[in-house]
Length: 388
Figure 1 (cartoon, rainbow, N blue to C red):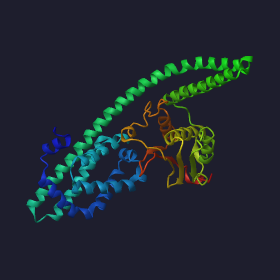
Figure 2 (tube, one colour; figure 1 turned 120 degrees about the vertical axis):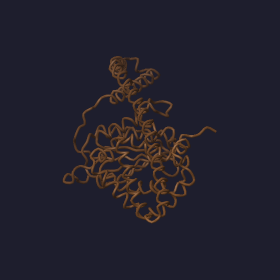
Figure 3 (cartoon, helix red, strand yellow; figure 1 turned 90 degrees about the vertical axis):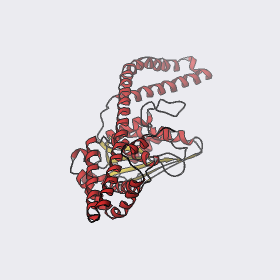
């Protein structure tokens, strides 16, 4: 069997059973210091504007400290196998998603190295041979960590650049053909209006076909609009945004099959935000259409809304089959779709609109079946927060 990249890296730094045993012993010594190390680590990070901005400032540090505690636990306890390698790869990919500059990785790893070495020096002061063994094992595993993160960072960055190039080409193509399609669609719509007023419309079969033509013209116009919205920055209307009202308005555009239940909780108690009601309506319509497609003729869709310290959170869940791991990483990319009919613009538009409002959307898997999307929108300054 061919040697994996992780095996090659371990062989390169000569990481073996003796180092694993040393790290497990070191865990018993360092475990009580993990919380203090996490505090020092993120205090230093928040001193640097670039890293603070990438990590969303102080609001995310509480969550990130818990993640760092888990990271240190696995660092010193293992097992240092392929699952460990895959878990570390995700960290590099996350750094690409949040646009964390690479030099912060080196600085962060050096800070952890200093903190662990300080503990080693203090604990093994009278055991110079053991001290060297511990320092050596720690150096190897931290070098492996850095190598893995840099490798995946580079891979994902190159993939992201390739996607951006494709999107640039996509934008140029859409921009050139979108406006050209508007003209023939306008002619069809005008001719259809004229035909509906003629005696031909009294024929039941002809009326049915005229209606079908009208529906398809509306669909084609919507596709063109969605395509153009992906490549242009429509100005946001900054006005009072009442999400409960926007949600109810969106429901009028999404048919609800008889066998599907729909429930929304917490919307009435949300504060009034600032944003564009029309674009937020599009967010709800796109998500609801995806949910209805996922559950089919039988199932449930729920929306739960709540207000946090600095953001409103909306959790939309459905009882459908969920999203596979293969699709999950690309689900917010344009032209990525699992539908037989559709061009994959719904979720990318949702993401774009939310980000332009200063918010975000994430797919968060949960136990059982079904998709779970978590939307966050920033709260306005405290004096202007009033219930909707």
